[in-house]
Image 1: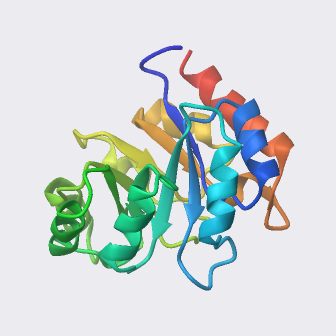
Image 2 (image 1 turned 90 degrees about the vertical axis):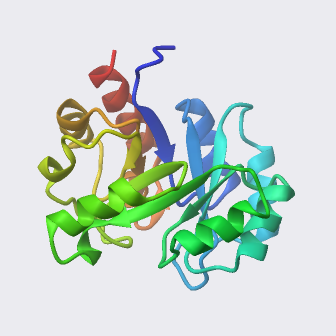
Length: 209
């Protein structure tokens, strides 16, 4: 495997079949959404079952929105998830508290739409103490943001927001992100589409051969 190849994260997995498709396409990460009231929210038990169907080496990312650190740390300690992704208003104090309860990695989502200016957006990226960042356009909006804004940032990140099999090659060529994150872009009628998952994975690997 090419060590410089952009990693793939399929997010919003909802079934064992979704996970088997992730196996087939050699995903590096999959995301389970634990935030209540979302279209792709899963239970702890379904997450446990889905993880058991994944190939070794595929990391499970739990996606949370303003959840308590006790709940997040509990899922990490039980190995239901491997990494916590914070997608709400969690601040540096929250990250510090979570780290007091677990040594597992933390991804912080930085959403372009939340900031009044590009300068404030870039400042948040620079100052986050999370292990990794996920740079997104907004919460599940399915749209891209001006990619040029982050062209010169100097830390690894997952690129998200409006990616699909048609535009992911362009994003990689411009930004060379550590990883690309996709959910709605590999779905048909809110369900994961095996053909779209394969097309997305092929586009990523073709661009970073």
